[in-house]
Every structure is written in C-alpha cells, then in structure tokens.
Amino acid sequence: MSSTTDAAAGRAQIAARTLRTDRWWLPPLANFVGLAAWVIYATVRVFMQSDYWVADYGYLTPFYSPCFSTGCVPEASHFGQFLPDVWFIPYAALTLPFLLLFRLTCYYYRKAYYRAFWLSPPACAVAEPHRKYSGETRFPLILQNAHRYFFYLAALITLINAYDAVIAFVKPDGSFGLGLGNIILVANVVLLFIYTASCHSCRSGVGGRINNFSKHPMRYKMWTFVTKLNTRHMQYAWATLASLAITDFYIMAVSAGWISDLRIVG
Ligand code: FES
View 1: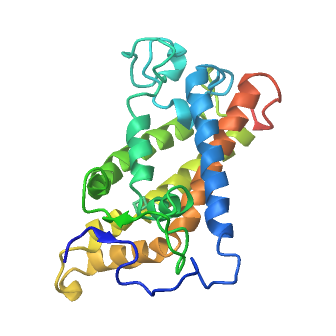
View 2: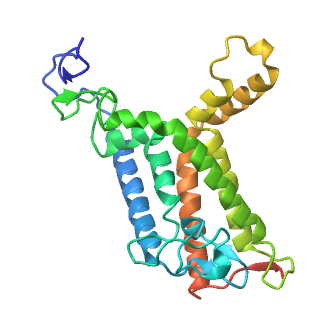
C-alpha cells in the first residue's frame, strides 16, 4: 500500500466533518495559544540581548546559557566567549537551536502542534482538511527520527543549566547567598531533568534492545523509573515551558530593576 493516501481512503464515508458533539476543538485551540505565546516570548527575549544577568547574585537566565557571545557580561560567560556580538545572533546561539530541535521533535509536542497548527488531524475522529497524508515517512518530517540525538544534547545542556543554578549560590564576594532567584533556578533545573528523563528516547535508551530484563536488573530498575515518568511526559513538557518562562521573566525583572530579589540569606 502506498504511504501517501487520500485522506478519505479507509475512513468512514460520512458527509459531516465529524460526528463528535463535545468541545473537541478546545485542546488544539489551547495548545495553539499556549505554544504560540511561548514561542513569541522566547523569540523576543533571546534577541533582546539585555537583562539576562543579575550581577549581585550571579543569576543567569537559561535563555542566555551558556553565554558564548563577546557581547556577554564576562562574569556571565562561564564557558568562554567566541560568538560575534551582532543583533541577529542570540548570545546562547550555540545551544538554543538544539534545544529547539529537541522540543520540536519531541513525541508529545509533535502531537500537539500537528493538531493545533496543521490540523492533521485537529482531534480524534475529526477529519483533517488536507487531501494527502504521508505521515512522517518523507522529508522533512522523516527527520523527526533524529529526536534521540537531540535528547543527548539536551541532557548535556541541562547539566550546564544545573551548573549555573549551583554556582549562583556563591555571591561575587565568595560568600553564600540564598534568594528567591536561587529557588526558582533550582526548581527550573529539577523540572528540566524530569522532563528530559521522561523522554521516550531516554526510556528506549535505558531499556531498549533487551530481551531478558531479569539478566539486567539495574537497567530494569531504571526503565521502570523512566516509564513512570514517561506517563506524565505531557505535563512535564508544559511545566518546563512555564518554569523556563518564569525563570527568565524573574531574572529579567530583577536585572532591569523592576523588582528586588527576595533574599533569605546574604
Ligand atoms: Fe518528548 Fe523526547 S519524547 S522530549
């Protein structure tokens, strides 16, 4: 059978687009609004090239980490500066594309944006407007298979975010400091680790290609743990979008002087 088929082929021949009477359009609409709002916010922020660093407490927003541009505040560049400082290159341009590709190829986000943006299909038992359907068997969607490689890169970048969160406990004068910003940075990193660990590629990586789990008790334990996380992958996907935006907004607000960091120690 051809992988490209008419949308109507193999489907019930009914005149109505759908017989569903519930509000099936609500989830794709909510996803459309939520994802579009996040992408607009993140795009504006990464091109602002300001208010990403709080010098007094060492807070660096994840949208600018690692800060590789020669335009970065030197103290915020924990891993060197070698990108030119021009307006169209985000300060973290070496890692942001991989994070974007990690999310774009994520199994959950694929479902969300296929439904919300391409209406392909918009919901279960609702016909899509497209005449042809080739799934993910052709270019460019066949590239979604590269998700597993972006998973490894994203895990590495999350380690860098963790490093940023840990060193932010040491103030520029070398003393220990704890503020609301530290708590937000750590909470964001914990959520990022949970989201990354709940990835389908992670589950396949720790438990795949094993014929007999009893011979690999350690991997079975890891696979069981990741499987539990995996059942809530959608929730973690949204939680991390929220935590990334909240972390960035808080650091921008403190850096710009709109608010003061709530200090607990130091
Ligand atoms: Fe969503 Fe891998 S499946 S991050």
